[in-house]
Length: 300
Image: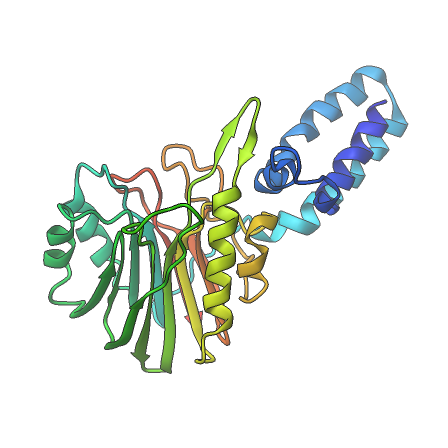
């Protein structure tokens, strides 16, 4: 039985797509927590030792090897030496009690681009004031914003509203950044939240619908170089984000868990590129938000 459980864990690690997404988006839920399946290894090892089962102990190598091949390379912090083009992504929380200190901390990163979500009207002046000198170019649409050291043109709203959501739910923008490496299309997006319930499983329908709309915008983008910064409310392993991740290059060199800030369990804040490469990815120190900021080094 223990050997069978080891085999099952190995199969789930390597082929999570075998788990259907109905009912309750169970497949997406598994993919969200996939790295944490490693926590069952000590339990299986103890069970094998108690049973004195050589077969079970040998079978445990299967999920261990699978986990290591999938996630072993992400154990580094991902932070690299100073220099190069950098971007920061942060959901600053619409109930952030310290917007001024959060703004100062982000400005202190000296990143080329800083993207924000859950940016409220009362908090906006604090972010504008903190970055006036070093970030002369910025744009906001609804509750998302982009601050840049480089000129921004072609700023427009990207409509990623799921069906049934009314006017005023603006969570996407697109701008052209005139960087030293040339023009880059920069997208900032905040996809709908997901919920986990004992009877409903993972409620992600609106998130998935919004992801499909974002993917349409990315697919229609005429510029070759693209940077996507956003709270996508899902990990890159979650099949619900496939429409987006299939169009972008994904950085897999670091876990860089960003949520929740108190005990980070997953990276749902993403920095993705097209015709560019993320060479390093890491989480930044906590602010007064329930998310950690995420930073990336980008090579064009």
